[in-house]
Length: 392
Image (cartoon, rainbow, N blue to C red; front, top):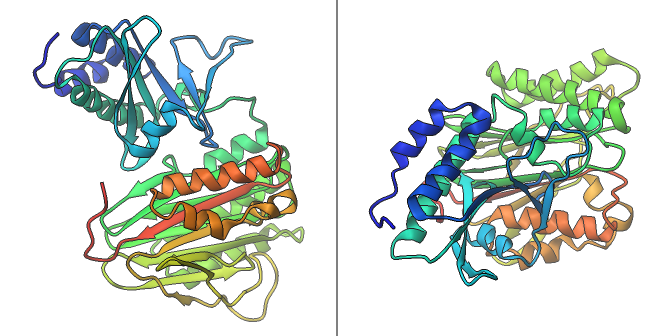
């Protein structure tokens, strides 16, 4: 078994030459040849972040195709994703199983799993490099195929859910020197119109969370109008007040008495401070110096409700070391009221925001016995500061 540095350039070049649906198999074949692996597989993290789905080369378009699902909670895969470090376990045949995180800029895509006869010196590091390369390959290839969308789903998706999922950013997590952001949406059985959005430019982090009235396709279409009006204004270089005005006007033009609650944020990465518009949405929670408190905000009317006054752009007090939690009312509605968000923020304060989001969503799903009556959406932001360097 070779112990020299893993040939990343070779793998990336081979994957680039292959069809998008074959690139994972190219990486798997290279690992088998390189390390004598008996079995190589990739497991996707599902949309709700509570399970992994094993991609084993089967055809997902075949009717009746069953995905191999792995419950994440308490598993070795859970430990790998939480620590972001490869792990070696013993298998039933006396060999070794290596599990490595497949993550790109903080966005946990899944894990790479290999069965090896033994693990020699330097192999773990090289497999970690292969997993890192695989993350870049998947980020590139998922633009061209539905394979990776299928890989993240464990149940049939309704039209409303399909519309809603396409509104979300491709990555649910983003890391930079100044901040770390993680997001999640757990959909209700009858889609409730939740969305989250973010974008990063040279000097600003843009964020939003919205909750459209109603359920199913109607709410998904309202969410589409709101999100795209907000994005259009943002991409045109409009300030936060104009972004809110255009989102509101789009809802009013749609008519039918429809409305959407939401929060729009802009955070200056160069020391420009943080601003927020609150359109009838629940107040965020802020963890600072070991204490969790609501952030009191002026509450303007939801987007789409006629008002005589413009939306107010409010300053948001954000200091290095703060953790901010934005969420929709589905996180605390009906059975989910039993979920103590403040306690969960404190319990997970030393974990990556990605883990805090997963813990919160898991608690909401458990409280509702897996059957949500309203969408539950969570955004967790760690603010490191203008001159900070992110943690590993």
